[in-house]
Image 1 (cartoon, rainbow, N blue to C red):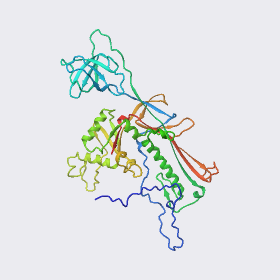
Image 2 (image 1 turned 90 degrees about the vertical axis):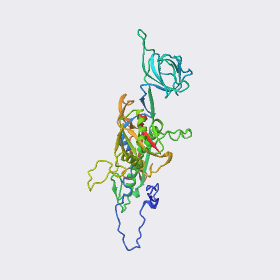
Image 3 (image 1 turned 180 degrees about the vertical axis):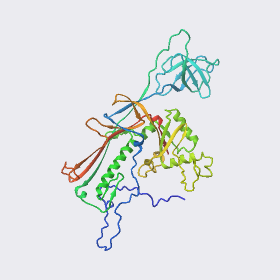
Image 4 (image 1 turned 60 degrees about the horizontal axis):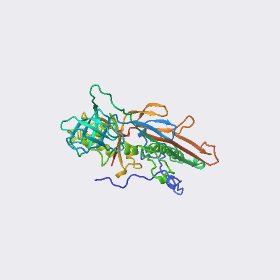
Length: 455
């Protein structure tokens, strides 16, 4: 059995750029002596059609007065190199190692520090006795047998230091390392226009929109839907924005770094289907252990991913295979069986919530393949960053929106009316034009703590 493809859901937009017959009721046949029964109020067959809610739940909005937003994120406190080699043979008492990690030009290893060198199969503990060059160091092995594992690639990390009595202190010091990131805002615009004559036209259908606006004037519905559509774009643009890397199109648009783009490049990516077993979730948890180890996380997911999580958690119940006792029930005959879960704890707290944006067929719902996103794990809480506007460290949500604003201009959400109809009297245009504008960018702090789940 399967869901038939027809009849299905309609993806044809109800909003058109021009006045077409599909926008208006044209069945006015006065030669018919029988009057039909009519339902004056239009039926809301698609429910709440807006998809914006994600950033309101997890983020905040704050002003910025620059074309560029920059912030610093902490580097690691301890240093580890994973591509370290030596030409010395096994048994060498004082071998020399070379650090080959990408981007490393000056190692943070000093004389007197104690290090552990490991190939994965064997480990050697030693003390640094010399640093011949900026990328090499020589050690004295503690073990009587000297070096082991030659010919393999080592990883090395510092675990302490040791000095003899009466010796000088540590030579050299280390500077704190920050990683700097930046983003730039984009300008979003929209417009609704209606002629003065059409504003005076009343219909028999009572229209309504998701924000509660209603009446018998069709243009009111179109104006309110334009506003709702723009509100959605304010969020979806922050999710989907990408920088303009195509040099040939650089003069057309600059682009910005949206949430999906940042997490794909600086965060954690799960691909190849949804994690459906505890073993797969343990892999995710293991990666989170290597990142910021944020205690509480929220997973925004599509319907299929949500069901996969429910089924996985239900399978942990010893009665799950032969019954439906997902939780603790009183066995009331009027009981409504709850087959879903709101979250679980395994090392960390994971809460899940359906994300309408990933389910809506007019947006990302139904996408498959490399372009499909099934969910996004967002760390809860806030982090400390240096705020350039305030000139000091401040607490900021991991996800937040910066909009352009100053003492004289606020571009968070601008709307104004031009023309000579609808109360406007600022031009000779026999129409009302409602303009919408916003200039904003999203800041994804600590992207290494996010997880994106792809198909």
